[in-house]
Amino acid sequence: MAKWQANGILVLMALIWSASFIMMKNTLQYASPLAFVTLRFAVAAFLLAAVFYKKLRLMLNKRVIIYCFILGTFNTGAILLQRVGIKYTSASNSAFITAFSVLLVPIFSAAVLRKKPCLSSIAGVLIAFAGLLFITGGLDTALNIGDFYTFLCAVCISVHMILVVKFVKKADSLLLCIGQPIAGAFFLFTMCLLFDPASLPAVTFSKELVISLLYIGGLCTALNNSAQIVVQKYVNPTSVALILLLEPVFTLILALIFRGPDGSTEVLTLFKALGAFLIIAGAVVSEIDLFGMLKRKKEVCLGQELK
Image 1 (cartoon, rainbow, N blue to C red):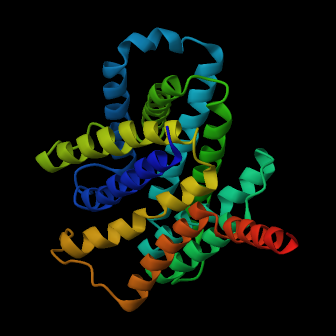
Image 2 (image 1 turned 135 degrees about the horizontal axis):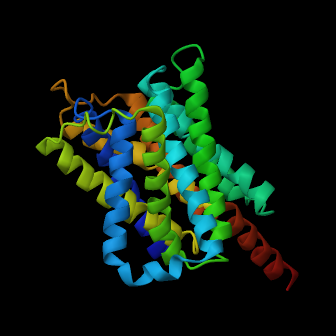
């Protein structure tokens, strides 16, 4: 797979994920957060197991099972921590702190993968992070326990991205794609039974909830999470984090078009427009390796002068 193809898939993933926020907001009354996330992963696990049923026997491998449970734990942990955190903090704080993972990825990448990010990646991260400040409004309240849970969510997202890079070098990426949601569903069902056994029986299976589960479980979890594991063989974790940061940009665009549960649409402000532009600019700066291009051009010019 060419790098431009992998980047294109990541942009499509960000677009798919962006629509999920509006759908989740419109189905909050039908299922508790834990029950919804559990059903979401159950749908993803069922779909992937049904499509790749011939591969299931290959998953009976100690290394693959361990890797799948580790990835599934961090993946579901990020979602649960974000859900718990937003109960105690504002939506803007949740969006801003969750996206803080874009700063953590290059740090963890350097520590775990022993891979120092290039100057263009650092510049892209800083530009995109400035965009986040504009598009989310930054932190609008004093820090509380909800912000701490959300920060742990950002840590889980970052660690998950780094671990994917390590694991795809040692195990079949397709098996990891199939096993991650299965492990996540197992983990979440266990959480339900231990901490909230009444949550699943209390679910109201309305038309809106079923559509939301099929979209979020099928596309956002089964398809997107699998695609992320595959493309991370061709794109470094920092670039992945930056491109997926287009998600709030797409969310903003969709929120300008579609009405929320209160019947209103998002209002576009100058700050939000500037934030969206900076996020896109950050991703572009990182991908085109601007500093590398300038350095090579300088070396060419020096070589010509010496001649």
